[in-house]
Amino acid sequence: MKGEGAALLEQVSGGASSQQVEEIKALVKSKAEAQDVAALQAQKANKIDTQLAMRWVEVLNRQLKQVVVLVTEMLRFEVEKKDMFEGEQHI
Image (cartoon, rainbow, N blue to C red; front, side, top):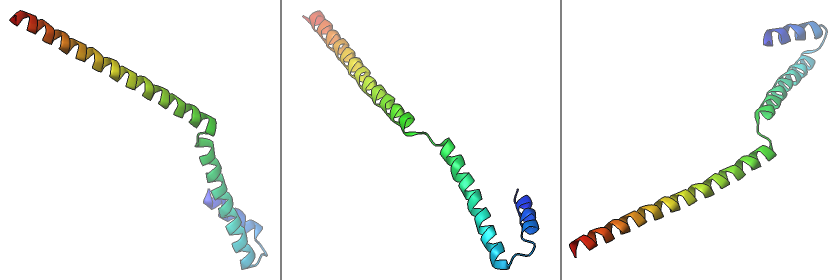
């Protein structure tokens, strides 16, 4: 792609001064960078999608905390039930 640009530059700059050629090269280089920026912008998530994803992360975090509390309470109940059962057998 750069080869095509250089060939085109040589054709266009036929009678141009070296300063004009340098200005054209700088312009072409900045255009290529602008294309890279546009490609990155297309890949970047927009604000609405990011906010929606953050909301889902919050919901999942809250649900995970609730599951942990439930499992802890179930295990505590089982341990207390086992202790009570073993205590009755020793009496």
